[in-house]
Length: 107
Image: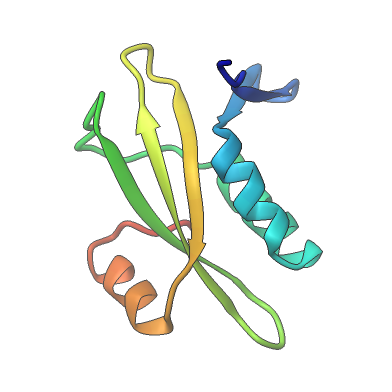
């Protein structure tokens, strides 16, 4: 049996966000405020070149708060320039700083 891909329409920007089931499952393991913060950060995410279509890529982020939550997201850019979010996981502050140095982080 094949799982269907989840999608959320963004009426304001006339686009859609696509998520793999693994991404949703992992996001649900985080505290509510963290999951909400992650979704707010990726809502306006536009990948910068080089766009490696057909290859997964990683990007780092932080949900700011009393205790910052550092995370990385694995995503795929399709041939139609759609982004499919595949996975999200917690990382260390050092890993997040590496993403900043590579200019591969959510702002």
